[in-house]
Image (cartoon, rainbow, N blue to C red):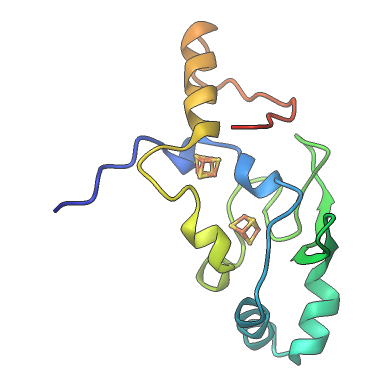
Length: 128
Ligand code: SF4
Ligand code: SF4
C-alpha cells in the first residue's frame, strides 16, 4: 500500500509545531543531541531540555521568538527551519503522523479566506 501524499508543506509554514511548549525528548534523543554537540548526555540534558508539564516529562527548552512568544531553541528564527534536522528528537520526526497537519490545514484555510498566500497567524493555535 502506498503512503498517502502529505497534504501540508513545511516550507510554507512558520513552524507552528516547533512552538508547541511540550515537545518530549527521550534518553535516546538526548544521546543523539549529545553526540551532535560533543557533550555528555548529562550536559545535553541540562542545556537543551527541562522538566515540563504536570507529568514532569523531559521536554525541549524554548527561547524567545519574533513571531510567537517562544519556540523550540533549535528553530532558526529567520528561516523558520530546524537547525538540528538530522538530529531532531523522535517526536519531531513522527509529527504530524499522517498525511495531514492540523496547523497547516488551519493556516491554509485562513490564507485562502483572507486571500493572502503569505499570511502568518501569530496567535497561538491550540487543540488542533
Ligand atoms: S506545523 Fe505542520 S506544516 Fe508547519 S512545520 Fe509543523 S508539520 Fe510542517
Ligand atoms: S528540534 Fe527542530 S523540529 Fe523539533 S521542535 Fe525543535 S526546531 Fe522543531
